[in-house]
Image (cartoon, rainbow over all chains, first blue to last red; front, side, top):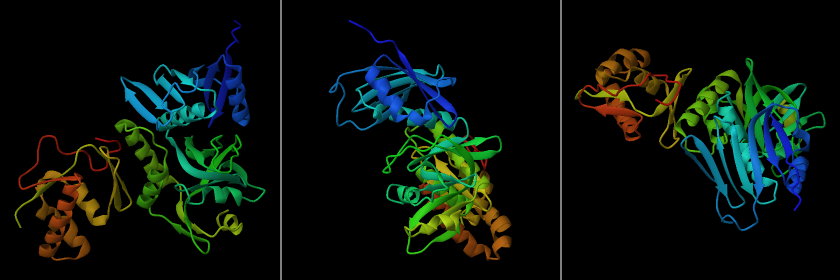
Length: 267
Length: 108
């Protein structure tokens, strides 16, 4: 039997690299294609995962994502994968079928954990850069995130149409591009910019922008921050970050009609 | 009014932003926002100062309301917060485990 050599796939999102190590050439190819714009082989990794392939049917197909923290170790299980990692050792493993989605789920959850300790979060939001400033549009499914991404003028660099990456760099909150695509099916660009403002989306007949109070801003953020586990310390950190962001950045309610003029209304 | 005492609940993270306070309840991740009056009560909820005294000293001068009606409203308000475990409400001073800092940064 010929055993393929292990291949590193280092995915760099928000200047934080996660290394997947697999001997399966099909999976490494899938990951390299999926994260093509976010590969950074020379980056020092914040987390490493050994990925092994299991045949379909090994896990319950109908299982929803389960995230548990026990004895300091995190474990995740869903119909297509199982994963476990030690956040202190920054190492873990993934057992999965050959698909690009399992690693994607692990990546999102690992980043929520990393960001919680670095004053940031993943937000249900589309985002883009215009004239050197990032604009973040948040809301639940159906709020118009993808529509805002679709309506973006040509001079806007799309960071994400679904999951936006926010963290503090120095004294500034910065939005980074992510490979986490939504309905648009297109990854963002691996670039970043200081956040100009965050907008909570609401549909309407015309464009209207209303500044939210700091407490309403915290509410809007907490509703849309990705959160995977019932962990008291982590939720306290995320809450603290949401409060800081609400005090540092303007947060608006953007009522909008789906036409391209909405971008000129905000940017 | 029978003297009531109020203390901030346990397992809460709270942050006062401008004149309002936002509170995260660790047990169910519920988010609560206190208005200006609620924020004043929250800040003074040390477990040992009678509610009537808090109302008389902090609420009445600021909002120009009479003590009796302000106390009635305050009792209703703190009991509602008590139902959500945001405040502990008692007819005697609350000592011991109470009461985390008014603007605790992390869950306490």
